[in-house]
Length: 305
Ligand SMILES: C[S@@+](CC[C@H](N)C(=O)[O-])C[C@H]1O[C@@H](n2cnc3c(N)ncnc32)[C@H](O)[C@@H]1O
Image (cartoon, rainbow, N blue to C red):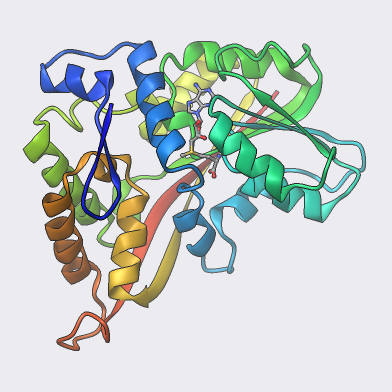
C-alpha cells in the first residue's frame, strides 16, 4: 500500500499506519509488514546517515560497534538484522578468518548485502529475529545488532533467541538511539519531523515502531537484565555527527527517521526547509552556500554472558 509522489518517492501507507490513524495499537504482524514495505521500497537507506556520522575519534557507529569483536581467527559473529551489510563488510575486511553470519527479514536488503560481500564468505539468512531457526544453540561468540533492536516488537523472543545462540562467555552488543539530550539539537530535529508526521497521523510517536523499553537507557538495562539474568550489562553513550551543505545534511538527517517516509510530497518539502534552517551552522542567505551539522546520540548496549 504505497503511493508515488511527484519526486518519484513512495509515500508509505500500511496496516500499521492505518491502525495508528484509527487510534488502534498495531500488532507485531502489522509492524513487520510496515518495516518490510519501507525496506522493500528504500533498500539500503539506513546506512546513508550512520556511515557518514562520526564520533570525536573519527569512528562511525558501525565501526564503534564492530570494536566489540576481538581480532581472533575463527571467532563466530552473527549480525542480527544486518540490512544491506555495512557491518559485515567492516568485519570481513578486518579479518578473513572470522566466521560470519547475517540475518534479516527483508530480501531486498539481503540482496544488497550479498552484492557487496565477497562470494561465499558470509552466510546470509532471510529470517525474523524472533525465530533464528538456521542458527544452532551456543554456536555464536558475538551477536551484533546495529540500529534494529528499537524496531522489534515483541522484543522478549528476540532476546531469548540471542541468549540461545550465544555461547557461554559470549557477547551481545547492540547499537541503539541514545538519550536525546546527549546530542545538540537532536530533540528539536526529532520533534520537527514528528510534528509533520503527527499532522498526518496524530498518534505517530505516542505509538512508535518497536518496544518503547529499548529506547531509554534505564528501561533497556532492566530488559537486558531480565533476559540475561546472570550476565553483565554495560551501556555506553556517545554522539556521532555530520557536516556539509545544509540541504544535503537535512535530506540525510530526515532519511534517518522512519517517520519521514509517511509524509506527502508538500509536507516533506516544507519539513526539509524547516530542518535546513534548524541545522544551519553558517549564516549565508542561500541554502546552497550554507553549511549544516546533524548530531545523533547513540547507546552501545553490551551484554557479556
Ligand atoms: C534500520 S535497519 C538497520 C540495518 C543494518 N543493521 C544497518 O544498521 O545498516 C533495520 C533492519 O532491521 C530489519 N528488521 C526489522 N525487524 C526485524 C525482525 N523482527 N527480524 C529481522 N529483521 C528485522 C529490517 O529488515 C532492516 O533491514
